[in-house]
Image: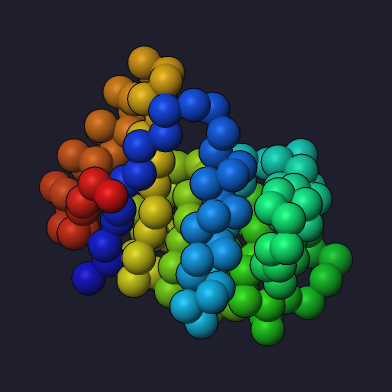
Length: 138
């Protein structure tokens, strides 16, 4: 059964959280897909992962279709694909339940600094629980 863990974010710094989780799961030996909204965010996050924390290294690739990424431990995706067979999904954007079911663990975010995003996260939490995912707050 897929587990979806919701993480509260108090400030608009989601990119840092995406990198933190990607690094944590990579260190644990997990393959990870990090979802972004579009190509612009994908390129931006790809660059940010090289510089976000001094001394950190996350082997990753942005899947723009131009590179082979089956063997990469961390893949940044703008489309709902899982080319590296990851079991961990870090959602920089909301994803469909069908896509999330491919993973053992999905990380979603509750952006408490924005009332509209907060309401949307609450709806996702309730929906995921209703359709049978194991949901929790982290």
